[in-house]
Amino acid sequence: MASPTYRTRGIVVRKRALGEADLVVSLLDESGAKVAAVAKGARKPASTFSSRLELFSSVDVLLARGRTLDIVKEARLVRGHGALRCDYELTLAASVAADAVDHLAQESLEQQRIFPMTEALLTVMEGASPASGAALAAAFLLKALATFGYRPALDACAACGAPVSLARADGQNAGGYPGNPFPSAPFSVGEGGVLCPGCASQLQAQPVSALTLANAQTMIESTFSALAVRPPTPAETVDLLRLANLWMGYHTGIRLKSLEQLVLGLQRCHGGVL
Image (cartoon, rainbow, N blue to C red; front, side, top):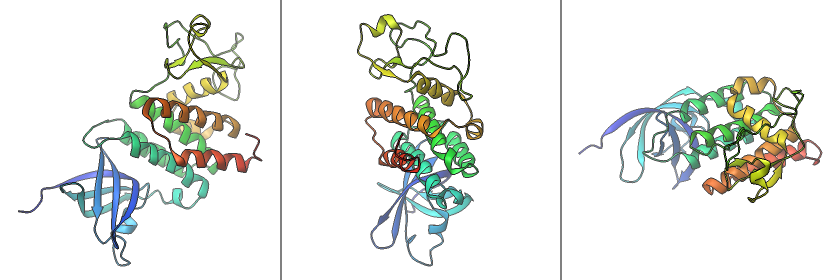
């Protein structure tokens, strides 16, 4: 009996070799679930699959259900996002997003918002400057974590719910981001976000740059297009990536090597002073 088939649109978020000629791809399905499938013979020189199943590509595929892995029967390229594979900095930034999706998305578990969010990121990142790529990756991490239920409390105390302001009393802005913040604010990964002074005196917290927290809130609430126009500085982006890494590691257990490489790349490009 022939295996049942189905069509779907997906974004290639991971690929690895299997045997001598096959390729295993992880796709973010349009439903937000992850699909693992084998493209048989995709690594052969004459195969049409290899060019259509590149990392970051959006594809329409016909899949046959398998026992452990589905099988790619047909693949039609929708959008290749080739610019992301031609620039080293953009490749690093896009890889952070792809790795995050590969870890956060689960098979047979739908999350309707993550697919359009990922497609929007790749589209904006493809037309962005390399300097903006890292900032967009940081924004995607924070947005994706919020989408999967791990949004940090940034405008109210995570413990008691009291309003918390990261802005200076005179309301001036820094770098186009809301609020020229105080030097630091008490932040608790375990409690779920920023703390008010009263709760900070009773609970375990660490000082985090209030500018970083204000930038994180802006990134969660802004569009990728807006962030690409006015990204934070490289130093601020490094702080945001570190915050996202800390948050993701604590709440999900995920550690991304690509994120560490992106931070190191930013540090090398800017004199190692970040």
